[in-house]
Image (cartoon, rainbow over all chains, first blue to last red; front, top):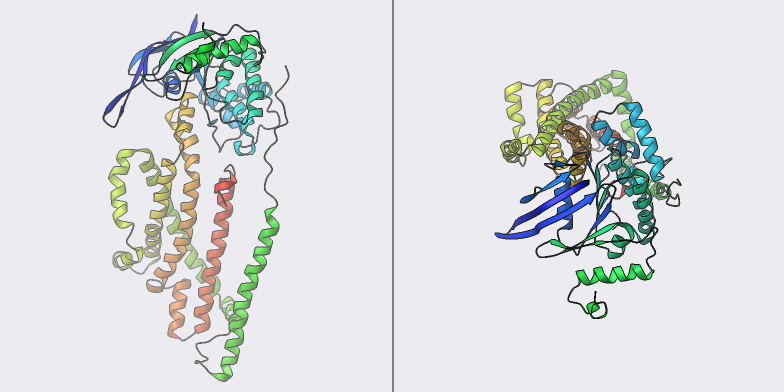
Length: 257
Length: 277
């Protein structure tokens, strides 16, 4: 069953008197426990689509359903991880993680065991009482992931969560996220502009195009994990996706499908 | 299942700066001491040389006798109590009103549209211009000074509280909403703590302002307090009292400001150092 479904989602902006179509009849379906990335150059509307799914932005037309229910606003069935972690800086790691469960009125004992479980899952033991300012970028994103997970969401939405990290932290966090995803049986939508990242992480890559933002093609990544970025299969996929994105460039001369 | 790596470390807390601050402190204290010593020498020499009327030129280290005299007479304590009582009452009233209306104006646009233009008309007018009106309405009573301080302090707290609410990162509000927070919870857990950096600045500036306008009010409309003591001393040519009480106000200001900074640092202990002090 589809965990997340976008049907003919369109979004128009009014920019200085002109209509501007950010998304044009986008269809995306994500199955239970699937990890799908939305890949595209800036301006293709991938972050707008995530905002629509998260319920922050209303689409001009089209329908988004999560677990069969239509999205009408932000809600705890969708765990969002933002680009710049968006942790509450005045709350400790523990307070950040328990924000969702506390909002839902979960009793303290239950919250405590939930926090302990998540802190162990993402490897933050000993930092429960630290403030975000005391953590490195990678650790902050781990807190952000556990904060989103604390609500047991039906689907996780990640908006370029690795882009603010340095190269080493990013590679580590990518592997760690795969492990967390497996361990929690989550359904994940990952927005990214990195072709490597999308192939490395996802079951399927939804390649988007600009003007107007739309789905160009959906590509299934059928490689065993952990994936090797230097393997021939990886490189073939990478060329194919690159070609879709930079269509008019001469990469296409070599790799004809 | 292996936990994530632990190489990434907690950012070290800045400790090195202490020595440099101590160096600064020595300079500061030294400069102030030097100033008073030069003044002392000049004033003592003046007593025989009479460049200016010795009545007007008090050697600063003589002020310790003034302090002792005021202490034994009991007016030192009673003046401080009278002044601080008005200052604290006025401060609490003004800041409470400023915080409440500022946060409401920041949070609810129609409230801001109704109230902010009115505030902006009064804000540029030096509060002292209204002191005669306060006296006319309320007389020369403590309530006059309290209300006058409350009025003067209101603007700083109001402006900063409103700015504080407006400057909260909208992503944090989105995050709270998507985590299922109710409107009330967003207000108490996000808006209120998120506005604290600005609010604390407003509260600290207001504390200095409270003392400032208190003395002005006491010079004109009081029968007790430090400002009153200065005016009283003028009638009796007690230059030492006038000087001593002026320094007393300075000292009180310093104590209040240091206290406010401590409170601020504690309230904003979560805040990254870059933009703090």
